[in-house]
Length: 160
Image (tube, rainbow, N blue to C red; front, side, top):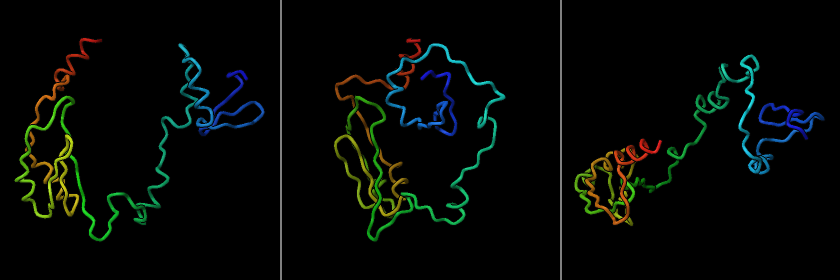
């Protein structure tokens, strides 16, 4: 079927006979087609969504009634929270961890080092977040290539 005979509407591709297929149903086959070098863009006067206000269909119902349950809202008796501090750069490993200040935060149960990460475990998200910021972690190269932010920027600026 020639692409010129098709149209799109509301996430569907519609044929001249009215048959509809969703973008998802066509995704696998479409991924095998070469990307066109030239594409005719839609005229601005034909835009249906761009330039219009679209309200969030969920907002009123869930937020006003407070009926939507987010992961952060979930709680079970005896439940604890944890946050992980990972290395700031690839190619580094933990040299030392000073968790003294983090462990002193009220509600903190433990600070655990595992693999190349440090986890703070506590009674509330806020306490854990506060304690994680107090961790003093020193990293060292692990023997693989280390590229810090400044090196990364220089590398890619030179590549363009």
